Length: 240
Image (tube, rainbow, N blue to C red; front, top):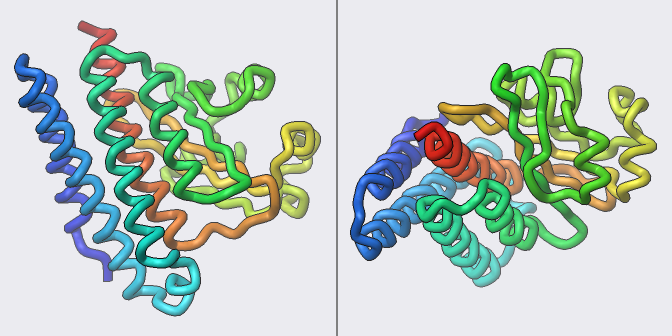
């Protein structure tokens, strides 16, 4: 049975970021952002533990060796802190989310790419922020959000991950298979971003067919929580 502990930990991270936005001392701001990253890290650890209890057998097969997991967790924590700090200093959304992508793809493993998409103000279409080539970004610009969509459009609409292990065997992907072939991916996992200011999605593309493990899903949820904070900060800054 899942608990509310992860959500409490994430709320603590959001509160740290809120306070960091209010202080003028750069050292205090840095400490608050570092603390926010640690709260988010604790949240994902808690989620991993709860998922492990629920689906022990399937989860164990996806766990990496402890030294490797520890190293990658530390790399992710540093990336979180850096992205949050750059955001507080007025960095662009493309830059801050790009920091997350660089480390996230390393954590997930070889042969993957990732991208962030943000919804338009009306919440009807998605627009590429960073991650994929310009030609791909242009081709999918304005991707529809809705129940009859797929991938990121469907994930953003439902608020639940859409995990396609192989686009060549999923009937919903028939109109988009040529696009997937052109840009060399078969697996496509889409995770919703629930931001107070604007929704969006985080997509992971794998070169080969690939099933998402519980560890993959838990990590992606951590990425989307961090991205939501960055998106809120970016839009709030533009509205000032």
